Amino acid sequence: MTSEKLELTGSVFNDRSGAIVEIWGIPSQLQEFQSLLPITLPIIAQITSLNSEALTGSLPTDFLIQESAHQGAALQVLPDLATCPACLEKSTQASFACHRYPLTNCTHCGPRYSIIEALPYDRANTSMHSFPLCDVCLAEFTNPNDHCFT
Image 1 (tube, rainbow, N blue to C red):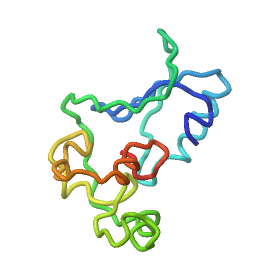
Image 2: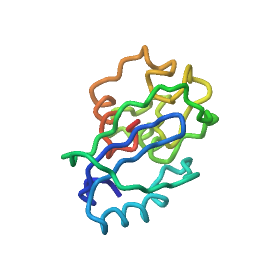
Image 3: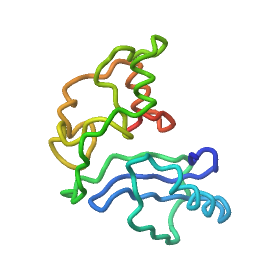
Image 4: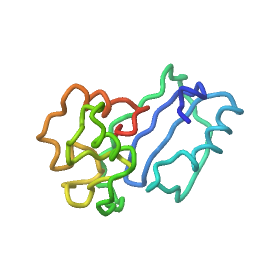
């Protein structure tokens, strides 16, 4: 489920309390989004609270993933996790650009605690910030429909 498939606009970003999603659409689309959200989250994600309220202002034309709000995040840092099946496939199949790359991971798996330098958990706040991404990895990293998007 993506905002594009449901024809929703708005934005999502992280702040000290978690992810903030601001969605615009017709009531039936918004209801479908809310019902699908719990079953489409990454495996390690969980919803601890869900609040809905009417938005005011100008209707956005796209759905944007915004930078995290750096307000001294109070979020918990997750432990390092085992590599997920999608990343295992990408690192073991010769048809993928990251074939044999030992550090393949995504937001569903991989290191967190061992590489984080500050919260929120964004690439810029990890020990990976000094390693530039190749064009293929950058395309995955910035595509909200890719499992490697962060």
